[in-house]
Length: 466
Image (cartoon, rainbow, N blue to C red):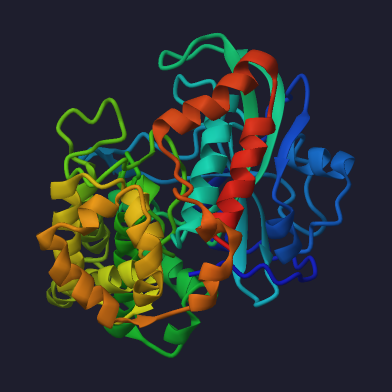
């Protein structure tokens, strides 16, 4: 998976309002005391025709939230419900973010510009609607790293420091504030359907499905009745299965896989207490409050499947329950196929099987090999035998239990062997993003406003994902 960064013209497409006011509340952004640009994603901006904005214009739109031309006249806080750690919560919705604009890329794909930390909304409850600067930096690091590792993810579009002192219980306070803008394929969540089902609005569920098919799944345009709903559901299942497999192949733990944190286009987004694995540890969790390990690394596929079932439950009044249950059987099949594809991609070969992936993960768990090191050492399979022999983990590849795995890997066809000619593969160790590294990146920013380590890391990630 790669994002399309082909430069294109600015093509506004504010279609969310077509759904009607039951789906959102018009809101205003907070009036921040300052606006200091800390990050702008010019590659992503070029894909939607916004790379030509001056810094002043950028801040005007993505720090002060003056509307983009011919786009949404006012930000929209979206309505949704959700299961949070499997407890249903009808008191949700965009509490510190909103949909700011919609536009199309060069390929005609509909994209959203949404915010995080843009101020209070009707759904803020007792929150201040703000984002810490550290939280914004962490989201940039997560999205850049995930994209480099082949995960379908939102892209951090902008980060602007806003000059407020925030109080937080989970980091030293007062702490600096920021507002973030992300570029997503969609902000229509599983929880959007839960909101409609909770209020018994079957007609609006069907209208939302029609909207999704029109703008995201046009291949289903000719379908009707149950076929239309089931086709929509199956498309979401496939995309969600692919995302779950990509997380596993990236060694990524999202941390909070609630139904309001999953969208219908199968993108990872809204990064809070995420972590990357130091080594394969099935019970590894990202959120300090995940005491039961519900969203641990190895339980993520199960969590995604459970969330898909909740989405299916919202469709039972608009389609055959029997057919919906039959569609759910697609998930484990799609997930196994996606695991084989995701691990093949990470290893730079084609044709690995899900059985191989299972054996590989077991071996990685037993040996505690650094997660990224293995994929770095063996990228291209047979083309990297000599490189792997010089690896810091070479002693593990001399073990008898590696032989069968190595034989299967070497039999796979290399993909992009020319990639090995990149300077990145002359290093002994790969680019990684462990929690200790994140803290080392943040420390000079917090202490001296020194962004050089952060910028160097983004350059290293760019090499890893080239």
